[in-house]
Image 1 (cartoon, rainbow, N blue to C red):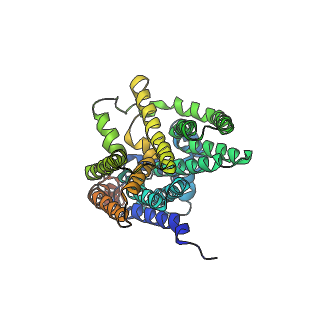
Image 2: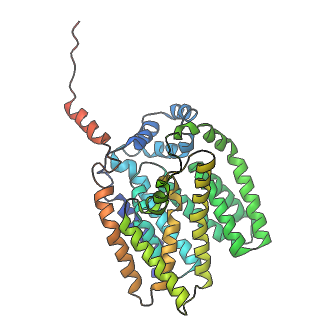
Image 3: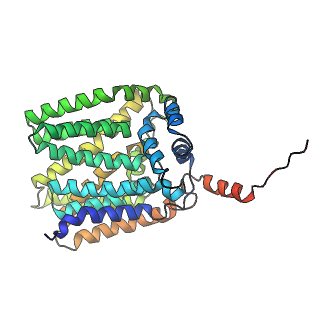
Length: 383
């Protein structure tokens, strides 16, 4: 049977997302976070890695293990160290398309997926040899699985959801906050006692299973004493850096599209259909709840907020923008035109800020290593 073109949408968007992220991935120098990945995953045996995680970086243990396997096949160069992240951005963008189609039109789904692929925070994560892009992909597909699970009446799918929750939290501890976002979505949009009960059981069992890991990770909280307390700059971090990563033009276009859609819904006869309303609900809960929890914790308990730690909420921004584009797309050409404007807005940041040789906070680890390699010579010791 011939596949309908719409069936290929997730695959096409995945290829696009991976290609965009991997473009120029080998040019920027490594920086100290990526050097930690190379040190832990490439320079150590599994036994040495296990001993390391007993002292530091337990929260990244699963990622380091995955990268250890990756480096058995590929060299630890700038491009190949970042390739898994670029592929993960493609996987996240494909998941956004699948999630969008579970609620809304093809226009909304594909627009959301493309925006996820070109979102400045996503293209930044796509060339980081760190777990941020993988956490994005995990959050997207965990949400896809939740929606699928709520529409099936078997216990086995809830078991699969619980296992997926455990795997996601082991990859990124902050993904435990996705349970709060999922709970909010179920309470607002589903309201089925059976579904809520099974969700609660699956969530409690999953959290209980990862409790030893969470305890170990919290015991290493001294690693993030460098994080600054909540202050005036936090507003800019949340509004711009968290999703638009040094790209004010992209942030401005996003604000204009959202404002135009709101005006359309309030001032004309156009109304949100139920599917779009549910998609917005899950996206807003996904965006707001984890951010709010981390900000409150940072203000009252211990500073843990930094924009890149919330990469896993970036796909929610793409979904919100996709719904708004769908509302504005009165004619078929409107959605591609708006997405093209977003691409143009993202281009300067993508080319200049993210793909330059010193794009990683001005660091030059790779250049220094190249210089040492070029100038190294045997040393004769005279006694």
